[in-house]
Length: 411
Image (tube, rainbow, N blue to C red; front, side, top):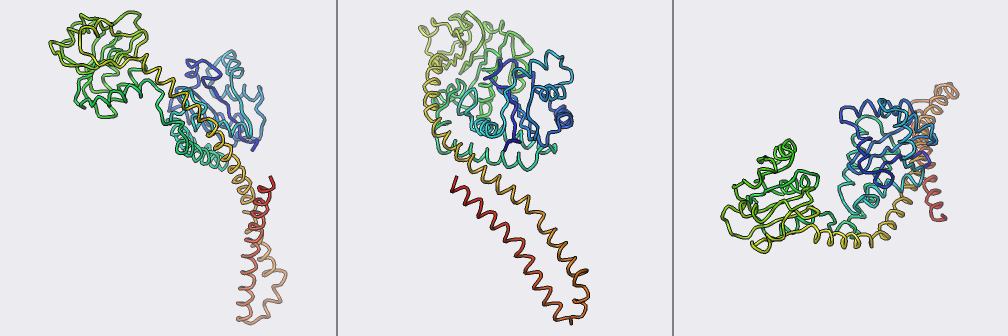
């Protein structure tokens, strides 16, 4: 078990904006992982990279010291300066043995996530393993560990309430929107092309909405998001003059003042006085409160969503004890699997050894005696030896498994 190590950079040990320093472009991953194993002598390696974490799951007999980490990061990012490498060594969270395995279980179950209960991480762990495996960097131990990790995570998501109530503002806003039975051909104005609106817009498109117009201070970012949505793009400065009409506004900018004033809202409506929906995800709000006094608006505001998100997060955190119990049991099961696997690997040499003994006995030690036997006797002898050979191989494995089961009960 001590061979399992994890080197992690997450929201818990560095600022989120620093996570990007550890990301690799897809085309560089094969070369970098190969170099990491070459320079450190690691037996197996898995690279997990998400927006909130970068982790290296390593199988090695070597203790993870500062010197080892220095070698590791030098191989990982050859362009880094000594100061960069020293920073990485200092800020790395290192887990070994049981702690590494528990960390992996916690990660896949989202218990270590920035937002507890978000299911995406289980897919990200599986994909990370498959990519590393396809490059030839994983072996028996990581295969078994990840397999059991995925099983435990699925059990947690199924048997507990950890992921039942949404806690992201985007998912909550979308749920509120769907409750209003908005048509899929509704006209959406996306004001702002930052992370939140990118997530919201892609979420909308994923669920079938298709009519988007994007406004942003920087045109290139508006164009990028609009291209992904098959929509139109404009500078934010053109918003007061837009007369294309709308059904839903989704706004999230970094402005300190209201972006959608009473005058701008009137112009955007283009004479349409029907009830509109405004999803305001900005802090402070982008929608001027005066709009609500003069127009029929169904407002989905970020402050209300954040309150629900906090309540839901507290509900999720109540499930942590149940999740930990599941993880603890699955770790015990993994340890039993690992012990059995060690015996299987040790016993895998038995058939070859038995065959060598058989060949020596038949062709050397008793060759002259066997030569005097008639054909029926030789055939009977072959059957007897084959029977003994088969039992000799199966009995030790059965006994070993019984010993392991007995030991687990005693423990």
